[in-house]
Length: 171
Image 1: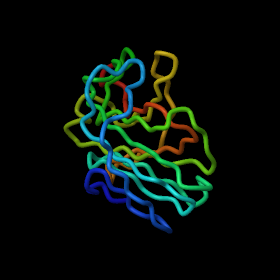
Image 2: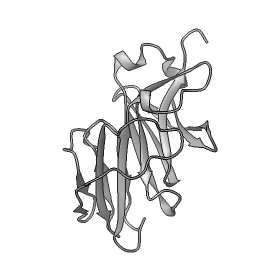
Image 3: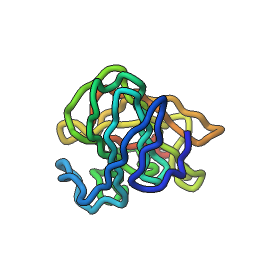
Image 4: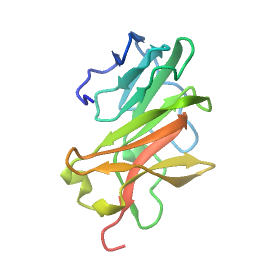
């Protein structure tokens, strides 16, 4: 899946998603203290779509995820804007928030985070995974690491705040 999609666009998957420019970022959930570094939004229809804000993270929606056009936003935050990683862990890449928060769906969406060797410098690559921020704390979800493409993917069935993390080297 491409990671160089320009901001505020949706790449169709088995159909067409209508891009919707983001005029203002949605309200930040509790724990986020900074301004988003990128946003993208699209009306995702029954055919599915891929949404990327051009920062290396993207979300793919399969055909049938939504029965009708559903406005979806992807907001990217820098690590310094997010709650700190749990003790013994380091955050890689950016945090992403998907909205509308709280909706659930089937089939699941696939979130992909990319990372660089420089970002990996402080983390043990065998421990990489995607975490979710719930009830004021980060919780480990898991994910599939592809070391060759420097990506971690996970399927999710609801929107909220997600971050790629790993255990700190020597922790």
